[in-house]
Length: 418
Image 1 (cartoon, helix red, strand yellow):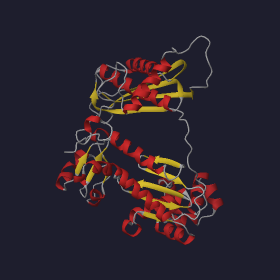
Image 2: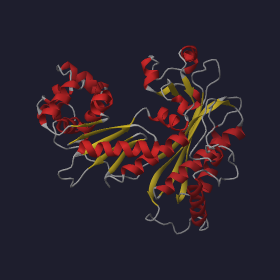
Image 3: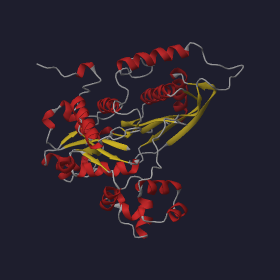
Image 4: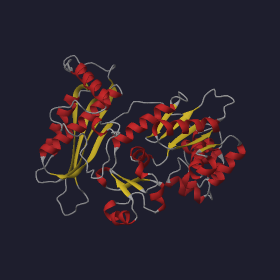
């Protein structure tokens, strides 16, 4: 059996854990640089505030309806997500973190288990230990657990937040209820083609011939169909090494100051290097990008990128940052107001297994230095140790005018009980 555990309105729920005055109130969370609405509470959804709404257009609507609008507090959300995922590991060792607020669980060898009760235990513990409300869907396959979770979320009073598909009758009933466009894994292109064949529900999709689905669409669509039929074909994802790692960000405002841009590029490069070390990889090359704000047609536009190759693979923040800063200096054009930049590390190889070069090698002091920096930063859960050309106060510079405190990751923001 599989389970999908999904945190309800995760960003808004994280804010409510530490600010109970938000309970029962409409809450909306904004994207980077306070741009668009990316998450909201059920109360805000009931007011028909659209997802993706640009806040500068909907500011009046939010004020008129007393919607509390907050900036994204990613350190808080990331820490709360980690706490939820660690709790899930108490119930089974087979956990696939699907997103910041979702995880698949596989139950191997759970004979004669009451999954309704087990799901309720999971919900209760997560709520008690973190304050985050969840819904749990349990079924014989991953795709069906998604369906079960949607039912648990849609009918909280009837299901008590847990729904189990454990028979063919309950599977068919659920698939006939599920609209085609709501099925996990069916995108707009596939949806359009299936509707042309008369499919309106998930059940209609499962009634199509196997050979036709496989031949007309893809092996992925066929696996999804079998999963919905109760035949497990979509397995838990195994952790794999990434082939490339990117850190790209929009600036809070547009900038033509080369020193500011160099500092941002150094921070992005250091972030990529840290991710390299975390997965045990080194890179052969980096790609540095820089672009102006394409939405401001009245300003002169410029976009550029360059590739830098290393004579040997490296995961050193010092080398990668230095190369990235030199690269962005070659891209930069004076007088252009830049809005976005990025660093991509690619040509990845395992750090403990790559072809050595007889004449070129990394400074042997870099490995222990990077290890010490990572250890300190992990211990204090923030970038306490940085390269000298980085801003010592902030890692990401974004417009966050409505930011709540980082209650769990910053000692200065811990709640004081009086």
